[in-house]
Image 1: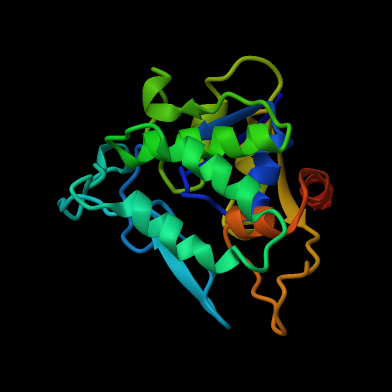
Image 2 (image 1 turned 120 degrees about the vertical axis):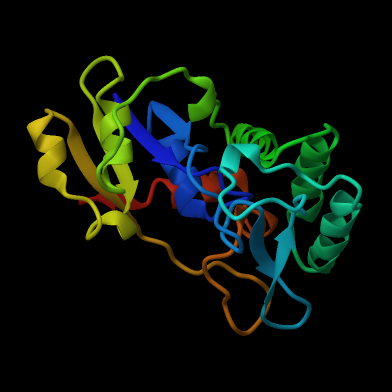
Length: 236
C-alpha cells in the first residue's frame, strides 16, 4: 500500500495533488504545531499584470504552541467573498475560469469552523473535478496510538508502523536529505521521494510564475491536461 502523510495545505501546489492521486492512503497530519505564514491557511495565485498574491483564510488569534487541528477560522471576516474577488483577475484571460470558480463556490457553500475541515473538503472536491475520487484521512481522527518520535523524520515512520499490510511511504522530493531512509528499511517499510517533472503552461503573460496554487493550474488547463501533469514524475 502506497502511503503519503502531509500537513493539510490550503489549495496546494500541483505536486501535493499528484501525491494524493498516486497513493492508496493519504493522511492529513494535523497534530503538530501550527507555523504561521506557512501553507496551512494560505496559498499563491496570480496578481493583476505581474507577480503573485496570497489567498488567505483568516484564523482566530491563538497561542504560539497551538496545533494545526485546533486552528479555528475567523468567520467574522468575509473571507470567502474576498478570495472570490481576488480570483476575478483570471476572468478575462483564463479559459477555465468559470469551471474553476464553480468548484470553489461549491467548496465555499459549506460552513467551516476549523482550517483542517476546510482544507480536507477543498482537496477532495478539487480531486473529484480531476477524476480522482479519494477519501482523505485526518490523523487526529484515526485513533492511531503511535510511538513518540525521537526526530522529525520518525512521525511518518511511526504512523506507517501502525498501518496494515506492506507499506511504501512516498514523500515529496524536499524530504530527500531530511529522512533517514535506513530507519524505514529496518522496519521493512519502503520509502521513495517524488520528483515532479513540471513544465510551464500558458498563463497569458510574459513571465511564468511557478509553484502557484492548484487553482492557477485549473484556471489555464483542462482536467485531462492537469492529469498529464500529475502523472509526470519519478520516484527516487
